[in-house]
Length: 209
Image (cartoon, rainbow, N blue to C red; front, side):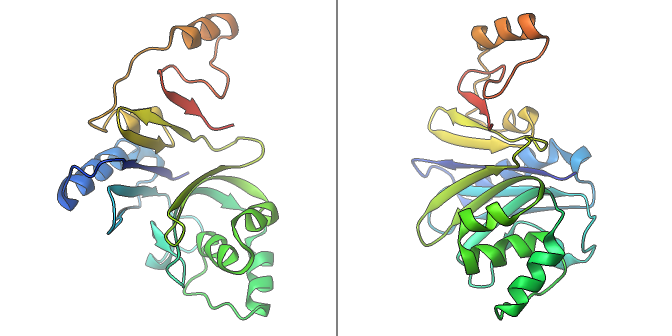
């Protein structure tokens, strides 16, 4: 299953140790999604962190651990899901001269982004996934979800922090999380017995469609 989480802050306020603690606490709130491994990546340039809880399915070795860098160090990823056609994409990338360290579909996504770009790579992927991807060169954050929305991904601003995660409970571990109930979402819940995307129960937090 796996769980992903992370955040960035407009004004750098915390040291690396504090950032790592926040990211780890967000990940630990989803330990049921990934009991096999956890990892944290922190940007050297800004208050930006990725966190991951791993359920090992494809490539059980450490080569499949996340967060993961692309070979050229341009992209950093945390990812939840499975790319069903990753073997086919791997063969195509090998024919382009790409080199792989392991056998994970995560590495295939990163290699594809290097070779084809982000949008073309995602258009080639068949599967269920929620992805957070940081472009180091362009300093851009991408949040990506599969076409059917099988894998959840929430995001939004809380004070001066932009937070994302697979589950709302992970967001609650961030010190800037406010948790104000959205009364309009509450009305939707009573009407439909669930809260449809892009809304969530909390103000300022949306469910990626």
